[in-house]
Length: 540
Image (cartoon, rainbow, N blue to C red; front, side, top):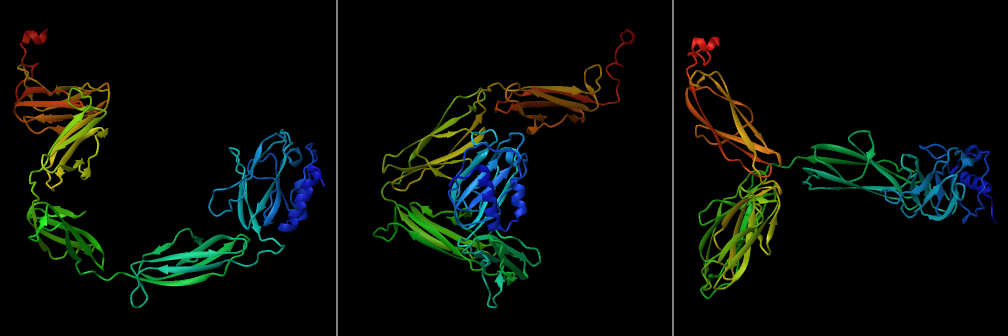
């Protein structure tokens, strides 16, 4: 049977009232619109018809269902003159398919307008599952949205609340107290309309949404109440769990640390070519903070990876500290490594490629090329450390683009385990395009005598300009002292002859030539330069 759009709207809302408990008044109000709709007849695809209507409002649908039952349904969306749209405004009915907590199995996106081919009346068949659906208007500036709660079919309303449980995790002592912290995880299930929300309280009467496990660290007894609500609005009875958190006992025991050595042995029982030492530390109290070691009496180093020892007899001393500040007694290990025949370290060189400015800085980019040779056993690896980041294996030329001054250390190891001494190269990356250093000048201010000497304090002002990348810093030196950064005019007032040197550097790394100004400060009790002029010149 085919029904007219006007009859379909009445049937859909009336049927919805039976499902949701909505009053007949609501249904009557929703269809009370004198303007006819001229669209062709629409045939519902399922007995369950859910109808949304819109009008001139941009903040709410004129009518919308609140609940439905799972199964086949026909969604009807009308935005027409019959529903109160007098402006021709377009609205959409869009089902949310991404927000957590909602069903995402219905992809509805209907655009309706009184001026479209259907005169604003549209329908689409869907299959609903138990749970909650969120819908909204996707038109910019519209804030129309709502929820549709779907319960199980068969005409039976969901009246059973969800099941909710709490699990507490953490280290416990002999009395069942949680040491340091306890983490509460809540889990809720609902076989019919689905879980809508889970809530909890912590030491108060204020329920708050549960989203992630709750960790409690404050010492003392804590009470957690928790509950869940399903998609049909059924809330479980609150449950309670009591947790007692105690501070961890004071840790006065240092960590345990051990060393193991790996490598090939020769007939004499010594390690051949190289030996690898691995350090392992444990602490059952506060935990291990770090491990340190020293080789052959050198400074202590932080242990981060196994230590490779080359030919020679080596003494390795090691220790560990925990997070409570306890340090283990140093232990000592002696390892002898015999050479395999090749005892000469490789030869390694570095080359930097790139366009340079007048100060030697690389414009925009520099390429680091490392080359290693070994005439005995051959090259096993080449490594480099850029700006203290730690050694990494070199495989192909390295491109550096960060505008700054950089330092690279590099080394090579041959197949016999010989490693070259680390070498260093420093270079600067300047901003591409700017190769001109700044212009910097000095100005002196103060009273002078006829000999141009200064009578008392002299104020020195430095002025720098750079039309390309801009001035980065200005520096100066007084009477041969180290250069210091210039921030504001400075005063020189002690007697004698003084020399101020100054320079400026721009954002591209270009530094100006050093400028110099020399002047003399004499006693301020003498006449000024104007007072020293002959009387006839002063009168003139």
